[in-house]
Structures are given as structure tokens and as C-alpha cells.
Length: 142
Length: 142
Length: 142
Length: 142
Image (cartoon, rainbow over all chains, first blue to last red; front, side, top):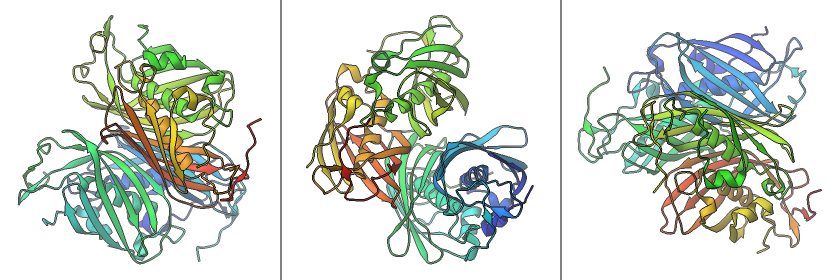
């Protein structure tokens, strides 16, 4: 697995990618006090962020070593089905369909016991140059 | 205006509420490097978080001094319409409808020039004890 | 299986329920010329309607013979992933979570070859008296 | 105003366009018994259809007489905020943003008294040849 760059906000959240292949990603994150909302449970915005991120990765894996694909989120829906205060949570993203320019993905966030905390769908758009499944050589954003 | 507690994750993001009344909220946030994604622009998860937060506040203002109302996000949709790298962004939330237990709200995030960066809708549920528009005495989460 | 009343609009669309059990429903519909949009393909509104309907059924099956449960759609998201002009389409709905008053479901519409035409999620609310999994005696709407 | 072709399913529903200009559309429909669900109120799928349709029209008006623009719905969210059994309902759609290929729109359905029955957002994609604001000569779908 090529471990991708997860970006500054990703590092602030502190999640890690534990599996990544064509059309599929699995990520983990340990809930800390900085992730809680004013009711003391995992902030919904973080659940949205994890779903968004997993949907993006689900459609941007590429086989060619050193190459990457970039996607931009067009739309994201989150359904909040449960709450958590601590523990390691898992996010799974799957590509559902799409064409050369746009793809669709679904993702879900599970707590340590496999209970569903949130799920949702996303429309994502490949950035110019990333339409090709072989991707493009990695270049840091300008 | 009673300035509400914005919670730990809210403080980490660093937004502030600049107007809050029945059915309406306006918030501001200064984009910093910690808010950027791996493409170097404001992370979509933050836009979702701001929309989520604004939708919640739009339905939980209460007139009675010292009292609060709590809402839980059931569902959130985000549409990503623009990008920003820096500057102060504004989020506006408005209540759209609902009953005693559930309410609907819409929100949008605007950049410094009033260009729309994202917008969306949310279904929110009043926490038990918060259905009354007069709210309940503030008590920190257990 | 208790075949439920599908209502006037359901009869106008002409779908049929082919499997229904706790947390799951499968429906079929034969595409006719009256289902097409101005581009000559299955109207997106019908895909939304089928997803909406399947999400509702996914949470309202009840074991007690003659009893029913009613749900009201709070929110529905549809992603349009494919197109069809004819043939028999299948809609599958699954309950994803929820509590006594509200539940979440996902559904997808597949064409004759199993290609996905659309998928989405829904927040549904049990009507008063339908919270109990045993349901309530059927009574036509007033 | 060029009255557009509303298609077979549009004619079955029976709505009419009462105002259409750049970025904006207003439609009306008289509720009949064929529009009701199994609870005897306007079917949610029709609200979704009207929102979908209005979002599409909001981005496809074109100034050039005889020309048209076509859009395909990528994603649609509907929030169901009210119920109606009869009367004339109004749907208003507004373009919210977008680029050459994709646009975003929001719409709402109001009952005779201006109460909101439903609202939502949509991602739409211009069909090939429709990206130009001047549109293309009308040609019936093959």
C-alpha cells in the first residue's frame, strides 16, 4: 500500500489509513478530548470529515507506484446514527459508481464494537489530470 | 446575545458567533494553515462542521437569560461550491421548519468577498428537555 | 409476507413488493413510456420515489398478522448513477439504524443487469402509534 | 418566456411553469387524488420530483430563442417539512453556484398559504453540448 499524504487537517484529526485498494479504503482514528463537542461526544463535523475523506480515497487509489489521483468533493451527506466518547473508530469507504470525471462513494463510521456512528454518500470530481486510473506523478500543491 | 459555549472542537477550529437570534445565527472564522487539506485549500470537513454547527444554533436560541437548548444533528448535507485558502469566512444558518421534536435548517459559508464556498441543509433533533422554546438551565455535560 | 397497501401513487407507478422482512424490502417495477423524462430515460423523480418508498418499508415491517406500521419521510438523498430506458428494475431497501421514534435506511435501484441506477439514504419517523415493533391494526387513512 | 417541453412524466404529474429566467424558475401544480400516498397526503416522491425538476430548470434557461440546454441530475436532497392534501402548490428553484460542467441549485415547495412542504438541493451536470449559456438548437431525444 502506498500510504498517501493525509494533509494538515488530517494530521490534526489524527486518523490513519489501514487498508487501501481499488474502490475501497479503511481508516482508523483514536477519539481524544479534542474531538468532542459541547455535549461531550464525538463532534458530528469529525464524522462528516471522516466520511468525506474515505469517499475521496475510495475513488483515488492508483496502481502505479509513486503516482496519485486527486478528487474534489462536490457533495456529501451524513446521517448520524450513534454517539461515542472514546475508543478507536473505523471508517470504511466504497466507490459506488461514476464515470471519467465524477464518481460516487458511500462510507460508514463504526465504533469499537462495530456499532454504526454515521454513514453517508458523496459525489466527487476528479481533478484535471486525475481522470486516468493510472494517476499522475505526485507533486505537492502549489 | 448570550454567547454560547462552543465546545472543545469548536475552540480547536476557532470560530466565533457574531449574531444569534431566534431562527438565525452568523459565525466567523479566520482560515489558518491548520484548516487546509492536502490540496492546500480549506478542508471540506470544516465547511461541513461549520454548516452543521450553524444549523444547530439556528434552532436553539432561547430568550430566557442563562437558559440553553441542545440539539443533536440527525442528518447533514453539504454542497461544495467554492474554495478558499485564507481570509475570514462567514457562516449563516437559518431554521426552515419543523415541530416540537425535530427541526430543519439551512446554512451557507461565504468567503471574504461574499462568494459561496458551501451550503447545505440539516435535520436536527431537540435533546430531551430542550423542546420548550424557553430552554433549560445550563448544565455542563456529564 | 403480508402484501402492504402501496397507495394511489404507488399504483400509478406500478411497482410491486417481491420480498419484505424485518429491516429489508425488495421491489420491482417495469419501466413504461409514462416513466420517462424529456430526455427519454427513466425520470429521476421515480428513482427518488422508489428509494423513498423502499426506505420506508425497510423500517415498517411487522411480524403481527394484520398489523401495520407507518413511517413519514423526514429526509431523502438520491444519487443518480445510471440511466435506463426499459426493462424491469429492482429496488432494495435496508434499515441502517435508529431508535424508537426515528430510523435511518439506505436503498438502491438496479437495472436488469444489476447495474446501479441510483442509491440514497433516508431519515424516517414513525407515526404516532407505530413505534412499537408489533405495529397497530390496519385502519385506512381518514 | 419559452415554455419548455416538460416530458411525459411531467405531463403525468401535471405541473406547469409560470416563470422562468436565468437562474430562477417557478412552477405550479394542482394536487389531485392521483398524487396522494397511502396516508392520503401528497406523496413525498412528487415533492422530490418537483424539487429535482425545478433545480434542473434553474440552471438551464437560455436567452436564445428556440435553443435549449439540458441537465442531468447527479444528486438530490429532499427535506420534508410539511404535508398537503389538496390545493395548488408552488415550486421555486434557484441556481446557487457551479462552473462550466456542473451546477448547484436549491428549491422549495410551498402550499397555497406559503407554508413550506419541502426543500432541498441538487447537483446537476450539463449534458454535452449544453455547457454554453446560449444553449443548442432543440432536437427531440432519439
